[in-house]
Length: 289
Image 1 (spheres, rainbow, N blue to C red):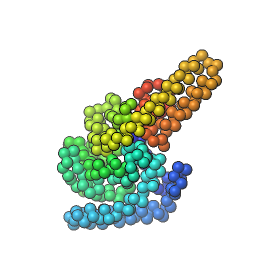
Image 2: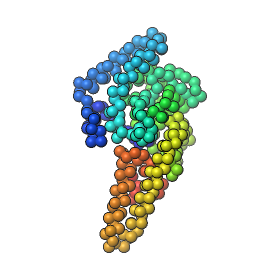
Image 3: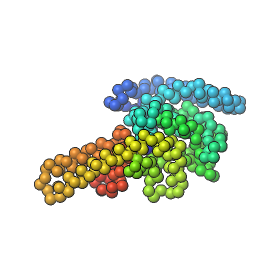
Image 4: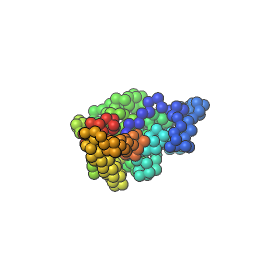
């Protein structure tokens, strides 16, 4: 998982990207129209809710899924084409525009169900890009810590909820999840018991280890980075007394290779970064940072 900075981002101010030639920033008029439609949909949902027509409200949400689907390509550009949770592209299957807070019903750890965050159904800040391998299992899963405040339509407090699901748009959350040399997603060292619970439940619910192809691909990345580190250290040792331009060039080459695997656009770059962190090599840690 890698931090996705969505603060202040819209389809208007997200520039063209050479890796996504089909992406074209929206015009001001198009974005204003989309937001106006979202508001109109919200008002219709509120009317249905006030009339206690929950079935009609949920059907209305399903019938207008194409509205948030229009933002899929924009969400892809924000993450360089990667799933926001697994950090891979095609390996985690096709993409869904996922509602972080479920739009119809919400399931707790024990399976009990409460009403969903229907008022966020057409709120673009609630959208995340997720491969459907994880999204299918997540469904309406969105448990809260026991004793947490619970946001409701007439008492909105989403920012105060103690949630289990890690959010890729929260820089603190993405630093809670780490990886080992076998390619497994694990809790980062030194985090609290509550944070560890959040990591473990997120990994389980989004199938971040259960989908066998994903840990295997992480393992390959880890091995590739480890090999580059070994070659870097070998070349560096030959430069210790100076006068070895060939070794110096190899040092630079291996640093470039390592850096390319840790950059935000690289698949599983967070795995590459954790591989470096576990090696505790100061220059490489600065590179990964």
